[in-house]
Length: 391
Image (tube, rainbow, N blue to C red):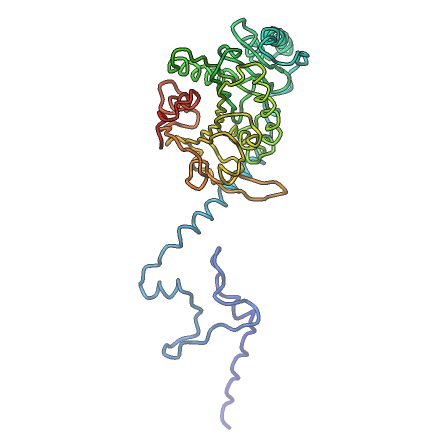
């Protein structure tokens, strides 16, 4: 009797047929894992069926695998950076209040409507508030804040507003506001508070010095350092959204409108907005009573173009070659019920602003004395637009 031949093995089910195939993360299986069998074997070759892809065929044939399209790589990089930024923001302290405990200070004084005639009274009242705030901060044990308040209370300082509570707010005038015919309003970015106000004051002082040096005979200038909102912390969830800018925008519009009552009626007003301050200016732009809006070191404005800002002002933009903000993706995505990112790059052709030269300025270097960027900011404020060097 002949020996029985063994029965051939039962063919594997579809799921089992693919279970042994290693899956490369980020790539799809060459065929679905359910309902289909693997491709048939090549009859011209020996050996069991082998799943193939374009990439595996290219590798076996020795051909060079072309890189994936540049646009796809950029999209992946942007998504990864946004995810990293959001993760860091959530894991880090979420507000300036975490780093700066609440500091006692008097409530802001009740002041008359701002006019040229009430400027002196306004300065005196806010100087008194800053003096009292310094005393209260010292009693609270915060010597750093006490020193900042004392500096603002000096007889040479001119405050249109002052609020020493919490992270604090202040609006300071450099120059003769009542008689100025050229006014620059500085809108700061993240991490600006009374504790860091000395840095902001140096920025305003540098611009004021350059303006007075360049101004033609008979031209009177003033610079206003407007810390009129609670700025977000650089590492926080708020710095990636327009939330703080949306809160600040109506205040900025009201402040600029009120300037007309204290300054010359036809004074030329330029808003110079830095970093997150450009988001504030972008949100305030519709109805803003300004002649120029200047965006420097901007992550975006929340608008897709200069025209979409709906501003009557001319829109300018610059970014220095050494500014890290260039690496922030100019996208806008919806995550967790909030909009993350600020859209189109203000120095791009698509945005449509008047782009000027900032040379190799770093993110905090646009107001460095003697720099190309500071010179151009002064020229814009003075209305000397034909002398502004373009990028």
